[in-house]
Length: 394
Image (cartoon, rainbow, N blue to C red):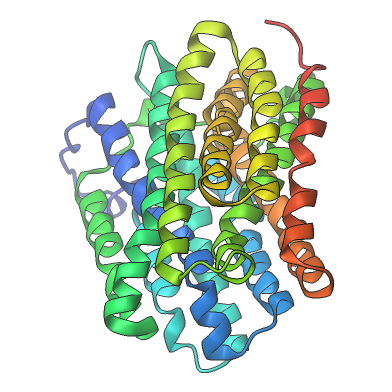
């Protein structure tokens, strides 16, 4: 992106090139922050439901708006990122997500709450496509492991979010959670000072439909697999605190700790999945994930006590093996469209799953029970296994 001085035709020295490892570290820190804020709505749902007297269906609509804004619209941001290559997509995202999603307790009414959720989600959406495309640039080997580190840094933010918000909300109240936005604002300031893209790193400036059409079959299978996993992933992330407090009788703090444990194991699972894919291939890892996660998640839904908790965290670990695997496989299919493919694999699939299924889970919970809703979600990894069988062997 040209500097203001360049626009005025005044020669300016080029900023020093940031080394690939430093780029990866910067994006990992930002990903941690962005995903830390993306879990905020789910964690604060019990308090928001109480303060605004929401039904579970309304709570589901809040979650649906978040995934619409933060995920379903990611391909648009991916295209804009590939088109304009402005670092502001990455730089401003942590601050925007932080301020709107930590300020939900200040909304005067439900429509304002919806608007704040949408705007906070826009910060999340702007970050992911560009960051996923740029995080591993310049690395000559181990891209699967590097992508796993990048993805896992975000999942680590998701994992620590429940404890972070629970501690602040317990000490300062729902409105006091606004103080949680400070790390995101600080990280945006660091990115503004350090993050630079060199000209050779610029992706193509348009969507190459011919390149996408050439690999549409494996790309469609990968997309459907992300969609199936995302149905379980986003619905659990959004409703788990409510499920644990309402269905299992946990306190707000207890539910937050168990949600953090589930998400932390997901972060570990993402890292392991990337490493396993480098060694055994992505197709095998996806098959293992789909086949292995369902029994553990069934254990969580159908039992209670420590057995149920163990099923939850182990199910989350195995389910999220596939997050970096899908992204890298998609980027390798169409290297020239890394931003667009990353948006499809990380955003659009997640967003469509959330937009369709989070309100549906809320509706089923209102009309039957959350137990029925969660039991239905566990069926999806089984369908994912039969889809993964059709992936081409490498």
